Amino acid sequence: MTNSSHTYPPRLLRFVAIMLAVTIPVAVGAVLQIASAPPDAGTAVGVALFFVAALAAEYKPVPLDEQGGRTVSLAFVFLLSTQFLFGWQYAVLGAIVSMVIVQVHNRAPAVRTMFNGASSGLSAFVSAGPGFILGWTVSPHHAGTLTALVFMGGAAYVVTNVITVAIAVSLYTGISMREMLEDYVRHSGPAFAIMAFIAALATSLWMINPRLELLLAGPLFALALYQRYAYRSVVATRDAETDALTGLRNHRSFQTDLREALALGASTRSLMGLVLIDIDNFKSINDRFGHQVGDDVLIALARLMREEYGEAQAYRIGGEEFALLLPDDGEQEAYTAVERLHARLWQTNFPHAEPVTVSAGIASYPGSAGDRDQLLRVADGALYWAKNHGKNRSCVYSPTVVRIYTPDELAESAERHARLKAAEGLIRVVDAKDTYAGAHSQSVSRLVEGIARAMGLDEETVEQVRLAGLLHDLGKIAIPDRILQKPGKLDPDELRIMREHADLGYRLLEGLGVSPVDRWIRHHHEWWDGSGYPLGLAGEDIPLGSRIILVADAFDAMTSDRVYRAAGSSGEAIAELRRRC
Image (cartoon, rainbow, N blue to C red; front, side, top):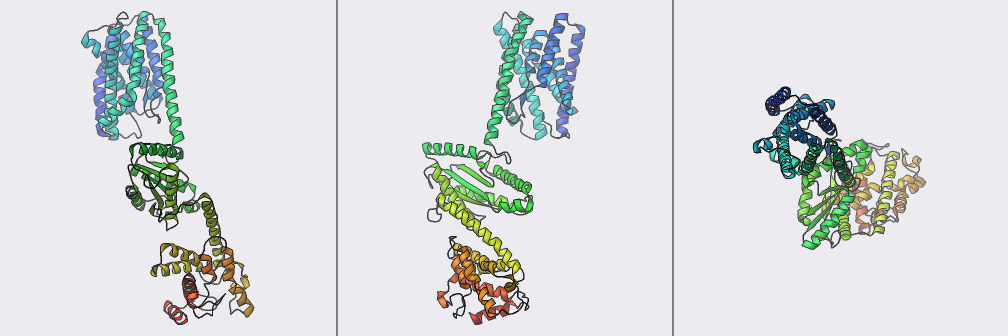
């Protein structure tokens, strides 16, 4: 019986009381039976030897599963043999005493100790039932009868033990009785069957010559060694296929299962959905809250995925990267499945008290791709699209929407992304140096994004305008502080140097492959009437993105405090823009 708390449900305590009420009279009867017919020296030695063997076996139960939560004790062999060789009374007392000694040594709670002792003693007593009912006696000269009797007694012992333990665990955990019985039979049945054979052998050898009992050491040692080897093999396999942090299946398992799923799909002409999932802005969580909180977020997401999709379908394949294999699902079914995860994330409170969002790329076999490598590429391409179009969304692969990049293109994109991140860092330096109040570049970025959306521009253009608005003053990193921070009007030389920032920003971004962002930044000071710089473009010759940035930049400048004047109102700024533009 498991024990994670010393507080037991009342119904379990009532069941333990019933077990004690049944077993105590049996134990008392065993003591009286022995007292009325004391054992001779040979019987006493035999009982003692089998008791010591049962006690030793009880101390070292054999694990049956990879968690080590289910065990089986070889004490069954010695207690069953004791019952047939010396009588039920010795088996009952041996079962109770050996179990109680081990439980006390392991500091088990009193309720658990009493229950396990009662269950073992009652099981040993019931094992004598088949022989008593049939009137059969054990004889080494009747191997068939002996074997049958041992198996029937062993079955009675196992059934009694399994049923009583299953009832107790069911009452404690709330798991159905049927599930508990099926679990015990599935995991313990084969081991008990093998031990019944060994018990029959032990009984026969003792009856022929007690010294032959030494021959039993080989089979018992082999059984224990094999079971422990099998247990360790299962544990090693589980560890090799499981992510240690989240408990999900790992990248190795994912690749193996993906190959097998595609092979099955090819042979049965069935569908298979693949979803690649990436946590949005996970580095920010680690940077701001620490890696322990980041790990807690990963664990929480893994738990949601396990609840939604089960152990066999969810994988952690990288730092903040996860995957789903959805047998028999096409793109739309997979999309619906991922939307459930988005909804669960929105409803979940995470350790850092902020929402967690994910981006997902979805593809299917054979609809999106015909082999494993292609399927991974298109799913990754869909994920890349989702990450670069706002995040917190799922993208179903379509060749008309998602472009699949070559490894060289991906490397170039990663380098470009890193350099843009560096440029964004420089912008914070510019804002700190300049005379504007607050984060001017971020304000302009938000304004241009709002203007672009109000104009109904497509999502890609909106993102490009937002980036250009953020980086529009990048060239000011090269402008001397004495000019940037001058409290009065600039003289002609200072004005000429200040106006170079548009061209400087363009050159800093040149070669990054961010066109038309770099061109928009170069011309964001061109005015409609041609009076701007650096080229004096006018009217429609000024790129649309530059015009949007100009309006947002001027509006933010007019509505922000400067060292030489106070901020104007929004109405005044709009009136001025209408007059000049």
